[in-house]
Image 1 (cartoon, rainbow, N blue to C red):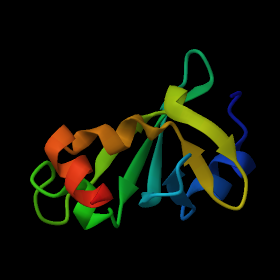
Image 2: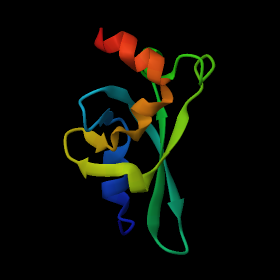
Image 3: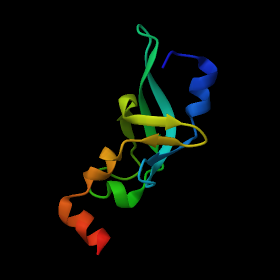
Amino acid sequence: MNVDSQEITALVGREVYSNNGVFVGEVEDVRLDLGAEQVTGLALSGLNEELFQGNVEGDKGVMVPYRWVRAVGDVILINDIIERLRGPEEAEETLA
């Protein structure tokens, strides 16, 4: 993604979901590589507590690599890899 200040500011505040429809968090900031003029990551806050339970303390955020982004629209869709933070046994409990 080439850096366009209007596009970048439009990302801030957008909700982020996995491509399976699980809410991940909200974009608080954008990490840029100014030399390459590219967005390299999204700083998320307001995280889904269930998804990050035990992995992120308190009100800290996470940085999601921009390469995980699948689509940008009214919301941002990312690869479902973020859901794999839960252990396999926890995922099975969710399905039961």
